[in-house]
Length: 291
Length: 291
Image (cartoon, rainbow over all chains, first blue to last red; front, side, top):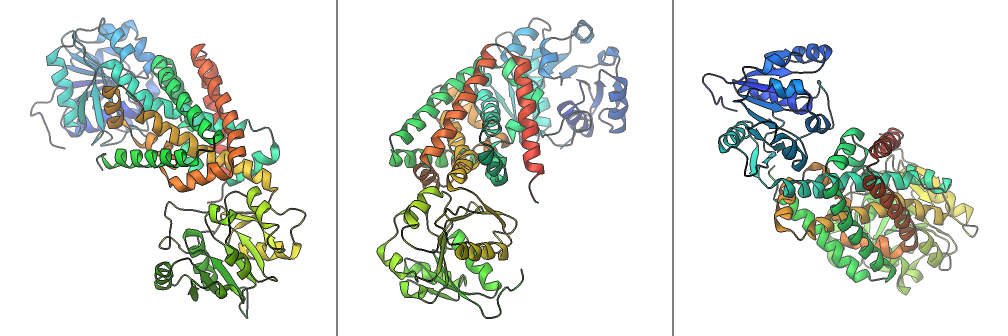
């Protein structure tokens, strides 16, 4: 990545977990002065060892000279920010977040800061915490901002510049559209996949259950990967995006019932056509992805 | 693998696709004389180039000297075998199959041959056809036989010897139990995963749909892998194991509805506990697998 600034800005990052820590590593290598704010001294020590920022502190004052602050907090904390945090954000700075749900974030934060830009870098690994951050996490990954009419164009441009510097693919969308889209491709899969695991676990015939566990192979492992992921993250998705998740779930249930009816009707040709459709849909989807 | 026989038997394989071809490669390297029977001359030519058996023919007579014949046919053909095939099977030979559903196979074949052993090597890749066979496909993979009271113990012992020689993990089970177990861990995942793709495709808001496609990442790709797989194989699963699939689906729908109700009730602690349960269940399942 090229250095974008001859005289580096100060960028604040609140939270140095997977996303915050990864931002810290990349932004330093781009030549920025990075100030990291964390809750606990022990986290600060670990983050310092990993050099996730040049300055790492538990003191809110560390943000005072920053002209861009990235709130890399879990969604629950982001939606219930402490007064200390709100007061520590410089009035003239641009503030953005990395939350995976946008309408509730926009609703809370548009009242809290004039230069707030709701954004969502779509990057992740299965790891979390202060040890998880790694370089180039955002490269070639989507970064969606969801401005509304109250969003400052100057602030939006600054966040776009940040995303592009990190190698992300910049997109903007309506916050509600964003939340419905992530419900379909991120939150619904967690739910569908978790229920598959639950269905195995609730099998009440012990012979079937033990044989099924012995026979479960890569197909079952892949289909259940996201349903066996971080429980707090999964719960936060459903809690904070519940209306979009319920809408996606209603559509899912309707499609499931339709397929069940085809089986009951012994409509094998229709099922074959449906599965040809899903095969093509998945191939098209993956073929249109950057490598 | 060690050579099990000083004077090799003749083993017949009917069909030289992924499973049949892989069997041919391993059995030859174990020192067996392998005769492959295929439908079409062009397949025979390709199979000869790949040396999937020592003798490869479209003539049913190629099975006449075999004392073990493995029917490595698609499940549809296995359940509706041609008279030519039935007549070509030596009366004294042991006959086994590799079908992924066992009760219907047993029902058809127990009447057709006195030494039939229903069996299911649980191995596969995404590839199929005469080019797909590869060595050691069965190594460390489960191989389930589903004998009933009419199954010859001598024939069963011979198939067990075969499975162990190939490095498989031998198990026996009741055919109905087997079919319920594969419905849970193999057929239901295909259905659940296909419906997830269908739910994306049937999104009627074009802004949501196009953003969702842009945002779909590895989680969506993994959860939909088996639902975007071979449509004929998926249809055959539902057609030939429909009662077990419908039973698994009923349980799945009930668990899905329960989770939906937790979301509607805003029971986030219950959802957190559920997701902790599925996380643990999946870890336990994968930790108990051989590498």
